[in-house]
Amino acid sequence: MKNIVAVYPGSFDPPTNGHIDIIKRASKIFSKVIVAVTHNCNKKHMFSLEDRVSMMKEAVKSIKNVEVSSFSGLLVDYLDKIDSFCIVRGLRALSDFEYEFQMALMNRKLKQDVETIFLVPDQEYTFLSSSTVREIASLGGNFKNFVPKSVYKEMIKRGKENV
Ligand code: COA
View 1 (cartoon, rainbow, N blue to C red):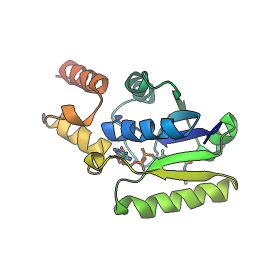
View 2: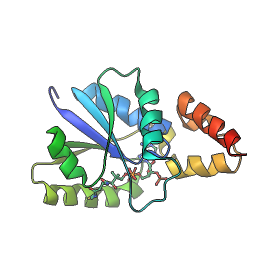
View 3: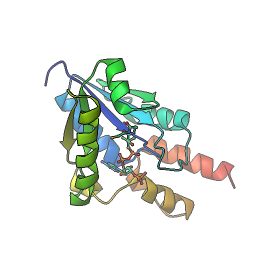
View 4: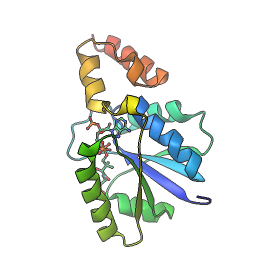
């Protein structure tokens, strides 16, 4: 899909290998992918917005057509601001579908021409979520294989600083 700028929104608290898998797939389809980090008002975040942006930047720096940004407010307003109509979302399992379907339709109600494209991550990542990673990390478990190396290093460093 040439010349289409797609937005991959999320809270990414923290970014996981599952997110990176979706970003890599999207980068092969779209001319540019903007990873848009935001505050999810339904969640209590572990990392600040600035920290999540900087962890994501580090994790995707080798992918040429990917940019990382942040926004507050409605996703559709952000799409307008950057002149995009295309949202990328990952579908890990059937259980994601209802929520994603509702969000896609609501975003379309809010902005008529918006399209949501769903990508399926490698099955290795279907069980993965940011909160699982946070929980394993805070309980001292090994989460090395679930997040990008740079994110792992940052989380270990912070864990030690908080001791
Ligand atoms: N690999 C690993 N984990 C994944 C994943 C993947 N491919 N895809 C999703 N997840 C995880 C996320 O890490 C997240 O984990 P957590 O709940 O444990 O933190 C969980 O699945 C749910 O992800 P998601 O639905 O993407 O939540 P989110 O907070 O990351 O993103 C927003 C939701 C930010 C996109 C949405 O709230 C939004 O658009 N907000 C802006 C305000 C707005 O416009 N609201 C109206 C929307 S209709």
